[in-house]
Every structure is written in C-alpha cells, then in structure tokens.
Image 1 (tube, helix red, strand yellow):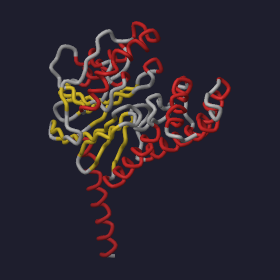
Image 2: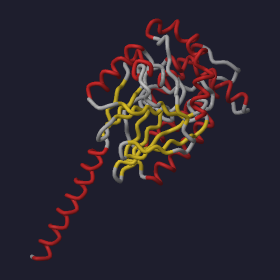
Image 3: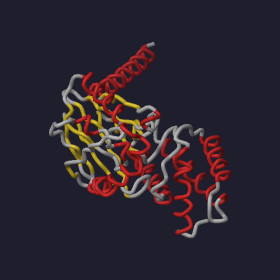
Image 4: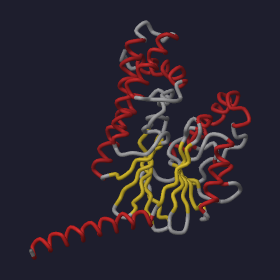
Length: 305
C-alpha cells in the first residue's frame, strides 16, 4: 500500500513539475500570430510577447495588412523593441514602415538578407505595384542592423539566434530560434510553407532540398518544440518533411511535363492539380504558373530533365 502511495505521489509530482515548466515557458514567451488575408498572400508575422517588451519576426506585404499588424502590436500594450527578418521577399518586409513608423526600433537581418532586399526592392516594386496598386507601400523600410550569420541577441531575458542557410526559397534565407525555458522555438520564414503552394521563382529548388535536410537534422538534434512558417499554421518539424516532399513532386512533374522544353497551359493545369491533390496545397495557385517555368530552367541548366 505504501509503495503504491509513493508511486502515485511521484507521478503526481512529475506531472506538476511538467505543468510548471510549461507554465514557465508560456510566462517567458507568448507568440501572437498575424495571418495576412489572401490579398496579402497569406504571409505570417509573429509578435513575440515577453515579460516587458515585444519582438516582431517578419512583417507583411500590403498597406492594410501592416496597419492591422500595428493594431495587434498596440493592443498588447508593451513596447516593440526589435524586428527580426528571415529573408528578403517583400511579403516579409514591405509593411515595416507602418509597423515601426519613425521610431528607432532596430531591424535585424543577416548581411545576405539585407543584400537581397537592397538589390531587388526596386525590381519587385516595378513587377508587383501594377498588381497591388495602392496596397503596395510607397515607402519601404529596410533592416538597419546587420547580425552575424550565426549571431545571438539577448532581449528581455531571452536568447535569440539567427542562422543563415543560404539560397533556398529565396536568394538568401535564414531562420531564428529562441529558447523559452527548456523549449526551442523556431521561426523559419519560407524555408517551409504549410498550406499554400510554395514560391519557387528564385530557382533554387535543389539547394532548397539540401537546406531542408540540414535544417531537419538540426530540428531533431535540438528538439524544436514548435516551428512557425512564413505561410500557414505552425506545427512540428514534420513541416520540413512535407515541404521536401512537395518540392520533389514539383521537380519530378516539371521534368516529366516539360520534356519538350516548355510548359504549356494544359501542362501547368495538370501540375497544379497534382500538387493540390497530392499535398493538399490550397491558395496561391498562380505561383505555379509564374514559377514552374523557372524551375524547368533551373533543372535544364543543371542537366536534370
């Protein structure tokens, strides 16, 4: 009877300790997710609430989405002390002007991410302003602090680490991790999507697969608790596996459908159907029309098809 009592007591104690640890992690960091609507191509921005302050990971694409993001920040009632960018695509930095205003909030990015923004911003505006009209911000705010490729920042008692992974979804991707108690939480930008079709126009799908394999090993080794993607809902490290499967399916079918050296309307429609049904991808279907020919060019240059 005593042994049974001690066993029961030990289980209760361990359960209490686990609950206490989870509460402590939640007390250290709370993640507020802003999900852009379809007009903002479903881009996520993450407001990280700590004891005394807020950190923002990525921003949004459009004027209206960035104003809504600023309302979310204001509603929490704590000062925004830092912004961290994962990569240089406009849907992740365009809205910064409405978010930070004229403040001196530091905006952190790796040198690679900053270089991509500075190099491509004008071309992106020329390409996309006719599509988005007044929703495209006339003024864009760029990172003002460069952090080392494996740099660390200490903010409000928490340690943030950025890791540059090179070309993957964009010409220079990075991810940010933060320790909250014993838990590691990862903000991976567009290294993996979760729901919408992926953007592959930058033509690095083979390198992207290699990056996914490396990051997946890291996630397993470091026991990442939650993975927050640039598009779609958060999940576990399986998001990385699903993205790799999506890219392999894309490449296999682009090679098959593009054997004559081009992708016609009917072939693009078949590709969209295959990706949508096999990977349950929904939203941003226009990316297949825009990007699949770029993937075919990439594979032809590498001698893959």
